Image (cartoon, rainbow, N blue to C red):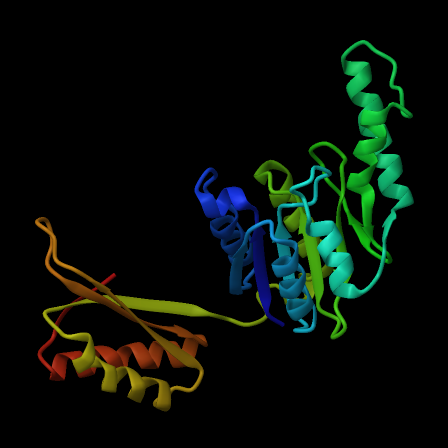
Length: 266
């Protein structure tokens, strides 16, 4: 089962806000022995969001989507999720209750009585309009829930706010509620070294040979240019199933020794 991430918002693409979700989701998955397979950034374009969700819902992947589930005109994710599934938006009864509880709590904190039928409070209820059949994701920060939907191949999408203080515990809740059976199921290790004075093109045949010899291993190569403080180097490594990765890394070192390539293990 693959895990994916969608980050939605014009403010990310324009640079007004800096994305924090990618690194955090990688961390949350890694702590549970899971890996992020892909990530996409989208603006607030409803056609593009709908097309993306239609595609990812058909993939069977588990997807976390951050942003765009509020009730202002630039929040389009709820509507696009419904369109991608071909179902209507409906006010979820439990979401309505939770939103009204939040409205009441806010009024109480301000020393006032909540007017649930006030126009601004009726507008807030739109945050509880989700695709028909959606399930709620609890929000420990302010009670306003997110939602999840199932794709046709039984993957699931989890929609959370763009605010990290809300999104991250909601993603953790989804992982710990639905996917504990996958935690630390596939052992995975990574070994790397810094190779100096070698061209990436000269090392490519070696990398290809390693992946042929060790089919449970992937090779990675990350070149770095020289600076005033350091020489140019290539971060070269292997990752994958522990036993094969260890053998592949030993083979890599032996071949670099044979090729007289200077290296330092990281």
